[in-house]
Structure formats: structure tokens, C-alpha cells
Length: 108
Image (tube, rainbow, N blue to C red; front, top):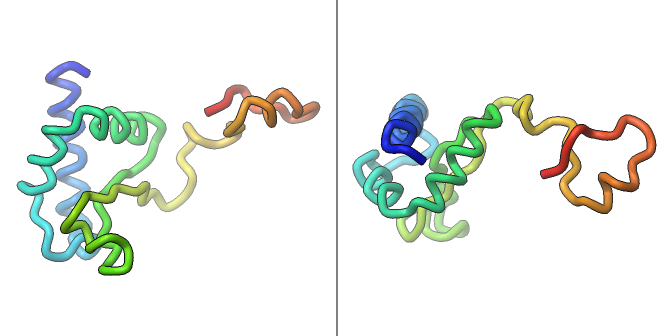
């Protein structure tokens, strides 16, 4: 990922973070950004979610879900419906090959 792509992704994530503060009470963007900057694997995964039409955001799972984001950050797709880039896709090769009719164009 280029520096420009990284910055563009972080700006999109920040804007979504700020628009939906109730999803992550008590968590500030500076803390999220610092952890993301240090985790290129997470950034690649979030970029793939964005590229397929998703809306990844940090969520607070509460104490039962691992400390409400205080121990680790949990991102999930908060899109209102399945993004276009993820519809009609098989999630395993065997299922894709077994389809006779209405075969998806690809597999995840």
C-alpha cells in the first residue's frame, strides 16, 4: 500500500469513526490511529473491506466481548447491507466447483 493509499484509508476510517461515536464510547481516534499505524496487516484487511464496498468501524463489544476495545481493537463491517463487491461469491472452492446453475463469478 502506498503512503497516499494509507493516508486515504485512515481519513475514511477517521470520518466514519467520528460519525458513529456511539459504536465506541470512551475510545478516541488518536488511540485507534496509533495502533493501526503500527499494524500493516490490519490496514490491508481494512483496505480490502473498503474496496469491496464495506464500511469497517471500531465497535465496543463490552466486557463480555474482550474488554470493550480496551485490550484490542475490534473492527467489523457496519454497512447497512451486504456490499455489492461481496455478493454472489462462494466462500470455499469446493462449493464453487459444485455449483451447476447460477454459479458465482468468483470465490473469496
